[in-house]
Length: 405
Image (cartoon, rainbow, N blue to C red):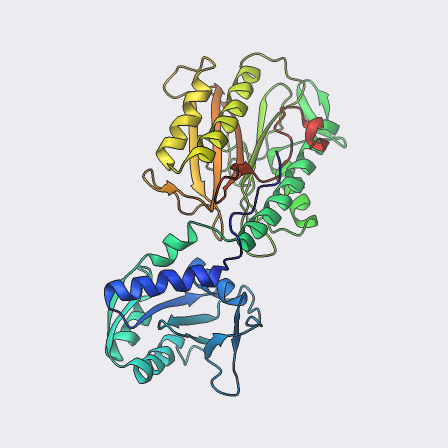
């Protein structure tokens, strides 16, 4: 895998966002776009991160009115402080409060009413009910808009850099896990590390330690041996044959799946499968089919824009070409990745357009209790550049290969 090309040529996130918002305001004859919630809301995060690129707060004039400049707003951290942001086609307004006695949407609604008068304001469907009531009390009529979700489906160069940082942390974690597996001894087919059985829960903790050491945040997204529906097998309270307490075994596929958040708040997405002391057979054939599917998908997305359904079907066809004909033997998943581990393009008909960043996964059922899974993040750039995967660890089934690039 190689470093992915830049998807943009100088356009910033706020340029893209404001252009899309202005178009949406014009179409709906609306006076402003409004969003309210906590800092954990991805729409709030996206707007604030976009504004960091080119906005400043003129405190001498109005500490809540954001206008163009060279310095971004100060980071506010990942708190539960409440926020309300608005864009009126010309400038941004921002209100925030950590006090239960004041609501930022109320203050924002009054400022908008003074500035623009009554009219329609656009808001995401998930805007909190109390925030909507404050806007209505100020004389505004609300209309739903998914404009920010749509614009988030494509990424600027800076966003790709942040995803790449998260992917680097994911790579460090998976390599840490691979190193542990390659160092493990085998005792009656059980993997033993430093004199203790190596369990899924212990391996997950080692992967998370590698992520943290590389500056990432696991966010409870690391899973060892997920089931076919991607439910984790490593929760401490689980019981049964695939629980966190049962030691990992030689000769069986061991899946490590992670989606850490990087220091820039964006996520990565990485899955690798290891086999310690394997004897080839079905997993080797599955591995060839899965790795071939990633080459095919990259070529497909270089040639044209495609739907999520089309790319999932191409991944599946490439794997099935290696003899996996059972209807439930192959799984493929394609989705966007960014401020959320899974985000648009996501639905089957969503288009993977230029400047999209997507997580691709192919999986093959090896037997009734195990799967071989691999997932990587691919960038589809503008222009004639090839779609390419962000740099990650080796896709080899051999844990010792994790040191290879």
